[in-house]
Length: 227
Image 1 (cartoon, rainbow, N blue to C red):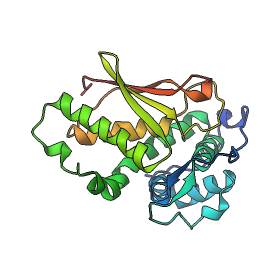
Image 2 (spheres, one colour):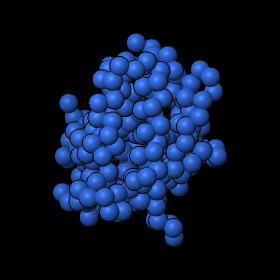
Image 3 (cartoon, one colour):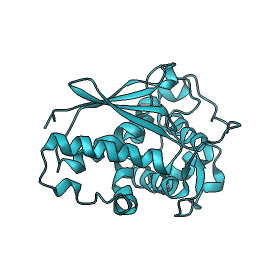
Image 4 (cartoon, one colour):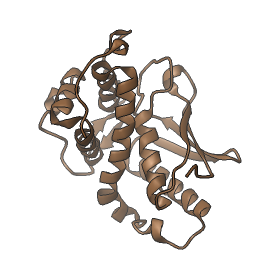
């Protein structure tokens, strides 16, 4: 089901200007940019994506998604601008909820394009202890970002949770917000954990964010599933 474009009270409060590309341009490969936009189309529909791209200052991508190759070309600035535009169109709460759903859908698309490259397409079906599969999955996903993108991720452990620490985050790139805003990353992790655990659900919550002036974006993943 696609969302309908509408504005609410959140939309009119302190609108952000889409970020500009900095002198040092960090990127995702084109294929990842294409996957995010394809996933977003599933969530908000074609008209919603067109409106979001236009408001984000990315009209060159309307009906012209990046090519499906691994060349660096989809910038952190572009990804962050998409998040801002979603919040402008659908309101802060609505936009972030849609970004989280887009993150989940993004993982589903990524399974087709990146899992074969990583050699873990069967990880969910391996006869391993659930905790070990979760740890291996998170380590491989972090390695994927570090290898194929300019995003920098490391994994830590505080005992009860794994900490997904994004030291260079594209989702909130150059943003300043009142609350953590990397909902697309949260959704991506939620769906990846659902896949690797064969349908279990985990608490996934962003507890620190660069956009609110924290040192890193930190997403806490409880080790024990909620369902």
